[in-house]
Image (cartoon, rainbow, N blue to C red; front, side, top):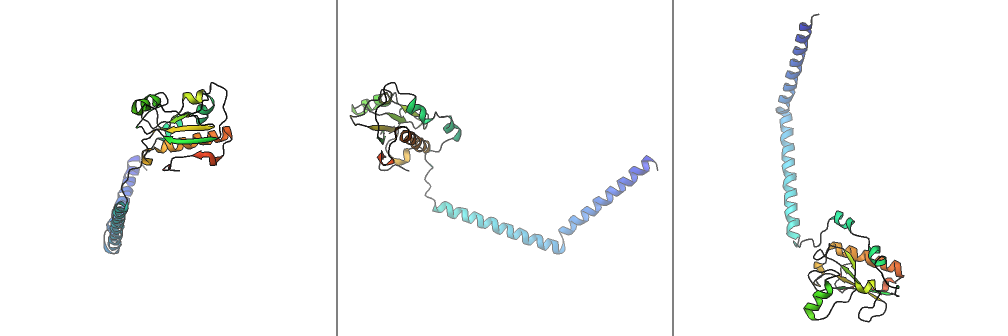
Length: 210
């Protein structure tokens, strides 16, 4: 059999398969198959309508409060470990610590270098703290910074054994970022382990979100 005849047979076979396929497609849109397809479309639109109504109901129930303090996981992972601030910044003989006090700076921003200056300008009293947990305004969100009182192992406000952790915030619970909450927890855990502090001696602001 010549090559031309083989190609002709193959082409005719392909055309026959194409015609058969078109007939099947036509059957899908006629008679019983068309009725079944219509029912499927009706069910699909009903499902979409139900989902849409449900979404509107959920939106109506929501109080529309923004999620405060959303943070980037990659940014969080770039932050230095809390242990670095606790152990690697001390320049004097380690003092004896048995309590931790977490409090707000009552400022919109700041860092370990600027906070004392800012509070001195605001009310004439320099802030005394051992650590600062930044909020992104003055230092990276969640950054844990050791202050001079910690580096020199000095008491803050003459309070024996109390480590003061200043969280940069205006004092409203919703102004504290998620990253600050997590990093403060990490810092506290590090202090507990390092100085064998009882969890009962950890003191948070009244409106702190645990």
